[in-house]
Image (cartoon, rainbow, N blue to C red; front, side):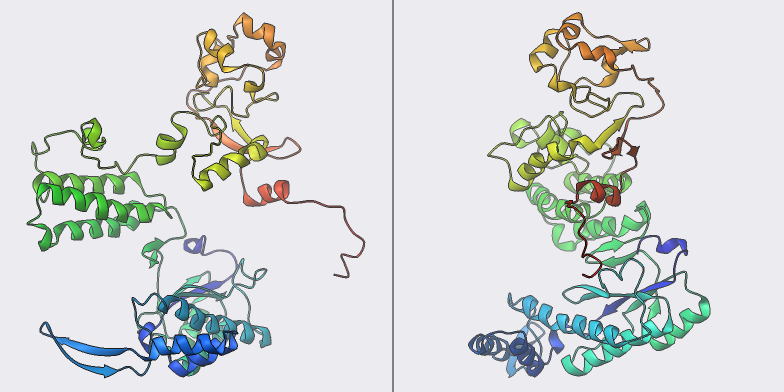
Length: 456
């Protein structure tokens, strides 16, 4: 859905489909049937269906539980088995869509979806369907949803479902909405708890996160919390809300500061922060308790730089056995990708002179050891600007004796108003902006061309 806000390119549409009471309306006979057809053993199917069909329910009225009655359909939310079963149910919709598209002569794929055959994506009951912006494609989708409704008992909620359009003519849009009577939506839309947006995230797009934090803090049950209780709520709940968003989005600093302001007001005043009430500076509050703080974590900390790199560059850090698996694997790959990451010099303040790729004989750490560097009054964290003086290099004589090829490096023309930027360098030495396509062309496995590939 990239660039949906620009209304250009081929016509395309996306439908966010809400399923009415999704878990509660799954047909049991249908569930048992698909389990068998997916190849589960008959005994396993009996066990699963026994778990599903043995549920009984009661009704809570004014705090008192009344009666029990047997269920006739549906999956219990909260049951650890239910998400897996519901995933299998939704897989049937995917198969129906693929079959109808395969048999249709008029369906056209959404932009960037045809090569992989993508029609829908879903996470449990959060469903998105994509198609080209034309009436025939919409007809195939609504027919698929109708078939899925008949066999599974799951009904799309018309009032809660939404359609999104990009560069679709108004008369075609109206015809599609006549076939699929959804409300027309505008991005951003919430998907999996975070805003789905086709452009850079702005402050206004994240206001819902601030409101969620404010509502949680303002809950009447929190009014009686002690100072320690308020501190624990901020550490375990409010900060986690921000971390979940930050795991998939780059949150604007204004939003981070708004949430931190809410936390400060809640801790010190149990409400809005009042002048003079904060007894200790925020940066002190965020220190560990062993260092005189309260152990809160500042939301703007760059975690990788603080705990992993610690002032060094990625190329300088070596993998160790006590590191996490994911971080260790990333470090093991760095020498493989290092030749392709090229630093374009601006003011020379962000480029490591020793470890970054910025000149034809980089990295210079191959020629000089950390001891050679520190002996001359420099450090392993020195940047390019540290060695440039009056438009020329300031190489110590000892370095030139050990690495004579340093004199072959042309001195960069530092521009104070321009920051250093990271570029992609291909195998031919061409420096360009990074793209996945460029990366794939360089890193993908290669082989000799065969004569029979046309036949395949």
